[in-house]
Image 1: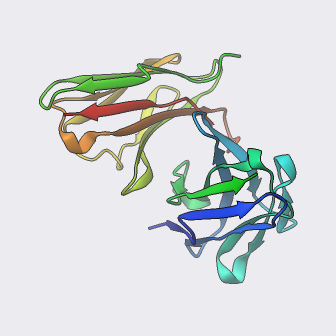
Image 2 (image 1 turned 90 degrees about the horizontal axis):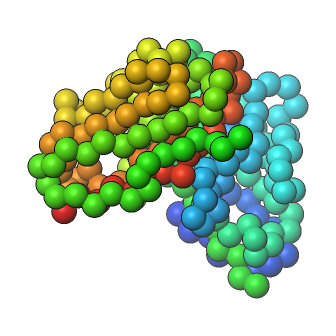
Length: 114
Length: 113
């Protein structure tokens, strides 16, 4: 069965600090990988996705993520966070042999201090 | 586009009562997903439909839970009887065809006392 772990439950940063949120999954086959963001009081929104090709993918709002197959990881990064990045971030995995089943990580809450 | 619509946004009910959550997917989307979010278990997929047909309901916790999709624009998730441990935020999401991007609704926060 697939599973997704996220390294941190809650991360607190000051504005302009760099961000890296860890995500690891357990599945040996081909996967599609996603990061979703949930701003306070809002829907989950897709931040970025990886299907194939360049393992470094860029998403909206200056976020990027790197897929490292050997480490089963898909970490999210941003060089300089803003107060408006305060949100909950979810990593998700879809194993291509599992149809449309998505497995989400437990989420990481990011608080950016002004 | 109004996005995925869910109702009600909040529901408070007593243990043993029947609860019905509703979802209207984005027009034209042929996949619909129901998720449950709790502090303990995070975001879990309960069931998903393709062209109104349930494809995988292995995430439905038990027989008290049922989901239907009578047409392409409406789905329900019913809990009967409800229990306090069902308290959670229930999300509906929809997507189009082979695109992997799911669009989530605002969720229904259910509290069972």
